[in-house]
Length: 159
Image (cartoon, rainbow, N blue to C red; front, side, top):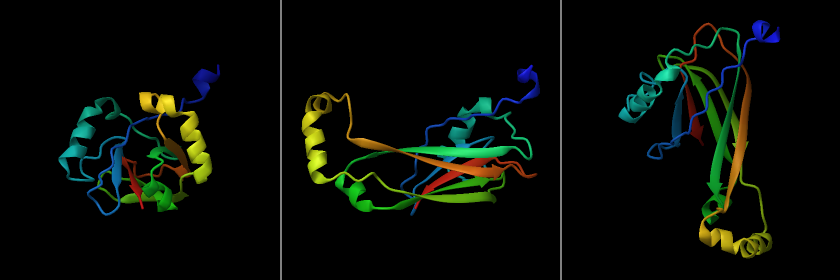
């Protein structure tokens, strides 16, 4: 009975490829299309390859949320980077920003002694390539509601 009364939520998962040639690394995730948002050929190819999402439409007044998972190596550069911002922009078909939200992020701190001890304990799997010294950060953006202008694309920026 509930299956007929309650709508099943729409879920889109996409691996993001950031463009590091920009001042702030940026990645686009098409909901319907990102073709007119950025004129780069890379993003046009991405939207053409996701033909199953072309017919996808988010209804007005539907609640939206986005979760970005970043896998960062535990390098000295990333460790010394400190706090950085992740920004998600919900874009219309003409590239206009409908809603934008930012969230601060940073790698979890591990002391030098703890890192050295963990590296020694995991030396065999590290050398074999079964595990990596990296951390995955989960950033959740929620509280958005689809308006009358439909969301066409999401832009994720690292600031």
